[in-house]
Length: 476
Image (cartoon, rainbow, N blue to C red):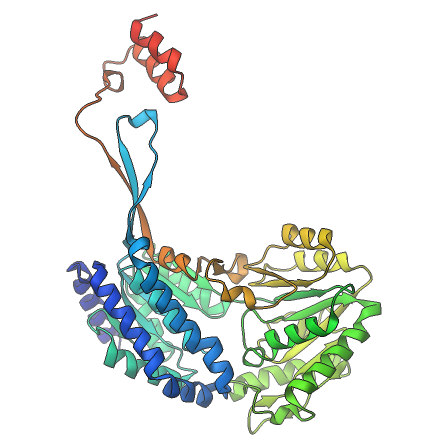
């Protein structure tokens, strides 16, 4: 496999060097081909998602298929404008001159995807790479095997396989890919593998985008519409792939005297959404595999936690289903409060003062997302100012991802780099500065032999001192 990967990387390099992928026409043709995949093979893609994750058609379409279509359509609509050089001002230092910033592709890029949104998190970065004019290799997650196989087949049918390739496989194949020299690497997944990717990239000084995770907090104040807040939390937690989402709320912080009301509201709305037997609800996604099921069960079965379950806890090992589960006052030293949950479990932490919640959040690693539900203007402002996170939602969860005018990415332990909308194009483009000058406007002061008069003149030029320039020219 290593030889095969090396050969494919070399072939991609040759295609990129030919200039083929840089043209507007090629980029548009590939974006249209990707859009055809998302439109004409919707049923096939949804079936693959259901096979891997048990995703309901509603969730699969809304969170993955529709998002891929949207990314394609936006790129097609805006590509000509994105590719156009950006004119910028020049200063007296280079007068007379003009300048622009040219967006050029990095070259041959590698996209390593993950399994929780295996279509969206594979194809959206590929769309971005193509838009910017790169040749690209996609390595889908082998954990979502049905989706990986389906994407490999469809991209092979529709895309220009000389410049857009899919490499399936597991750790061996990923390791072989990381040995190669790439011009940019885009990785979505956990921080452990992220460190491996970053170390491999460092050997070639390859720039990377790491979309990781973290424990995303949500503060719930007491001056809110609790029913609406509960519904939005449920939608962003259990309605997003059973919590197997990097931006899902990982824990909630609320005041001690408000916790019971919050639990009641969550319980009531959960029953409306998923019925009295949620573990058998067709609207709930399953856990991806038995290994992750056992990992989540271990979090629940810890002695410090098992007696604090106030909602749910039911499990169906045969069908890899876990009911929406809420834990009240999980200890700070428990596993569930120290590991990224990535599943349908939601601890609630209580504090005496809601502002203590902000202190708790800032004492931990920076998350991929952070949320707050409040009508207190000052509290909102303090939260936005003090909490460092990949993104923030005020009175909402996960929905900031839907806005392509907002960059999506992490900070610190939750990742580096961002994409979505124009940010996707920029993520896979080198911003090349270009200065244009003619052969007029020569200034002898820049050349030897150096004299006090020349230095005086240059100091005046660099400081923008018009009077000083005139005085230096006149020899005063």
